[in-house]
Length: 381
Image (cartoon, rainbow, N blue to C red; front, side, top):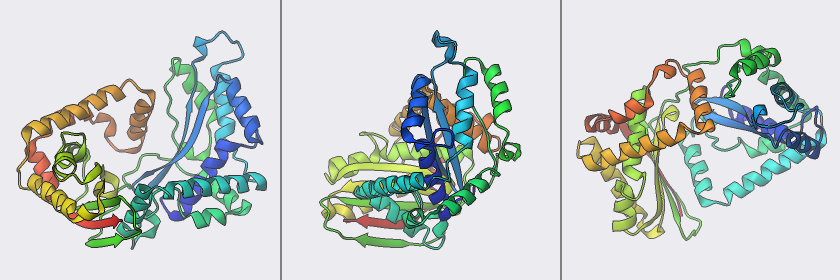
């Protein structure tokens, strides 16, 4: 569904509520007891942000029926329970609503006690100061969650039913699971086109430099670069490689320059948020050395943009990403994530990530860095 602050707040509310209880299982204890009967079936509901879209993911991890000698534990039973959990949120229960609101408020307060989380929230609010619907980075506006009512929750659930939906599954008996899913998941959204091109949020030219001083012992530095143009899949891979090259491990450029040589950083990270047209570098460091660290970051990005690239380090960065890819291929959650992207993005199914990583060149990395423009510096001290 479209990313708005309202949609994200209510997606967080409904997701948390469904993990507590549903119409068929009216209390937390009853729902947990039912899941425990299914050999501790793990059920999680999570709103995920993909640029200007929200995906509400219902993920169930269960023991294969073929692995236990229990005639009542079948694919039919599993799918039936999941259909009830997913399609039947309890939006009529005022006690459940109030409990869920309190849980989210507690989660939010706990998150904001961490300076790194507070800093990233402030960073995105500045980055999207002219587009406030895109500024929320965690669970949506907490004030809107606190003010939610039974009527507003019901209205949101009704709208959810019409949103494009897709069901993906990994199971030993895939044919039987496919039949059961088609028989049980017939909501209107399944008939809608799930794939879309409408993900990217163009980076607005801002040139922000802001410092908030709260007397923290460790400063949080956020350096945001925008893209001049939208990236295709290959260029997004270049962004991943640049992230690894700059701050992937102890041999990376920023780790050695800021942490080892300057002695300033406790941690340095770089992330390529392709759908947000954002390349973000962040560090936790000594408050007195923020300006020096900023200068190092700007210089290292500039070095890449003018073609001064450590080829041995580039090779090592690519190898590290390939190893991560290789490990991920054996994990069901990684496989599901790739299947989701196949459903979401045009032509993604035909895209060979491993090949793209292998063939990233220094020249491609240089061109990627040239496409970046420095857009925001936020420091929390």
